[in-house]
Image (cartoon, rainbow, N blue to C red; front, side):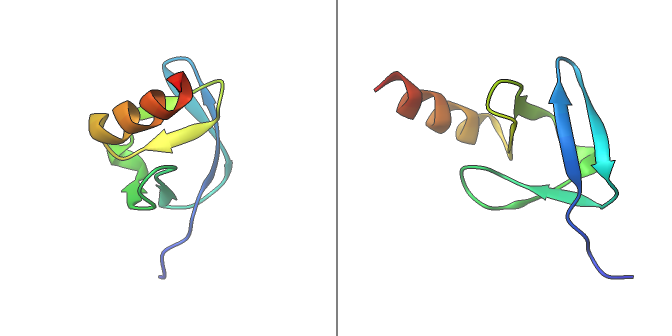
Length: 64
């Protein structure tokens, strides 16, 4: 079975799966994030992040 990108709706403390898949892409780095490893996202921007590093990068650009 090949890899398939999932489509999610990010909520506070959980996410809903709209379209089945096994990963999403980081909004900052473009890295694949397996759904079981997805820990960082932004509800307002509806973006997923690979790690706290990418979260920090995104928020630093929003402050400018």
